[in-house]
Amino acid sequence: MSSTIKKVLTSIDSFFGFLASVLMRVLLYVFSFIVCVLTVLDVLTTPFYDESSDAIFSFSLNELDNLEAVVILTFIFVTVRFFRRSKAEGVTLWPCLKSYVFVSAVSVAFSSIIYLLVLMLVMFDRGEISLSVFDEHSDLQYFSNAIFTMLALYAFAPLPKLGWLQKMSGKQEEVVSEPDQSNDFTHSEKGSVDSNMNETDSSHSSSFHLDKTDNK
Image 1 (tube, helix red, strand yellow):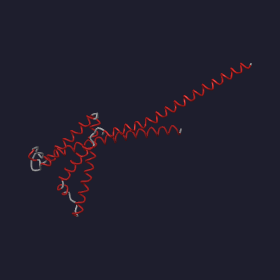
Image 2 (cartoon, helix red, strand yellow; image 1 turned 45 degrees about the vertical axis):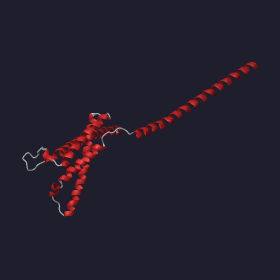
Image 3 (cartoon, helix red, strand yellow; image 1 turned 180 degrees about the horizontal axis):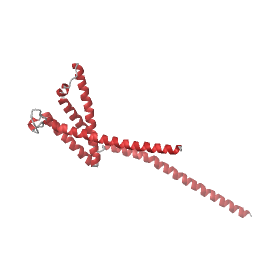
Image 4 (cartoon, helix red, strand yellow; image 1 turned 30 degrees about the vertical axis):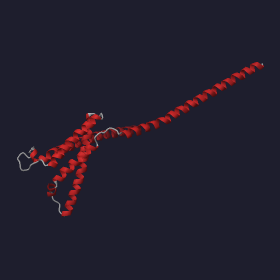
């Protein structure tokens, strides 16, 4: 009876564990995807934001500062480099997209934490808490998110192994294979010694039997 109850409880626990795992994975993927899309849109469209116009976004190159234009071009370059490096290293599309999404989401979360800490220091310095601080430092938020995202995408793009790393891995494989070969050699030596001993024993026994027959 107790074993049956234990099996039932184990099955229930496994079911809810798998269900929670699936739900959390889906939420993680969806959240990371939304953050990644918002980050890309923020980097590419925020410089064109215009409060004075009716269209809100005026996609005109005249509205861009030199620094904003550099940020947009650098972000496009880093994104293209990430996917090209992944393809060159044999990474398929789905793992490449997952890596891009997670790297973007984590970098934005990290930069947002730093941005909020800076704003908290500014508020404590002023001695007041107001939402106007966010408007005053909107450029800081844009450039911090863009720079951290570009650095993360550039740093975590798949790269080929360096020559000295390949040599080290080759030496480690040789070191691992040498004990195996020595063990095989010792085993073969032991086998040959045992076979020789058996042969000598058999020869002695046969000679002993011959001597006995001769004496008779």
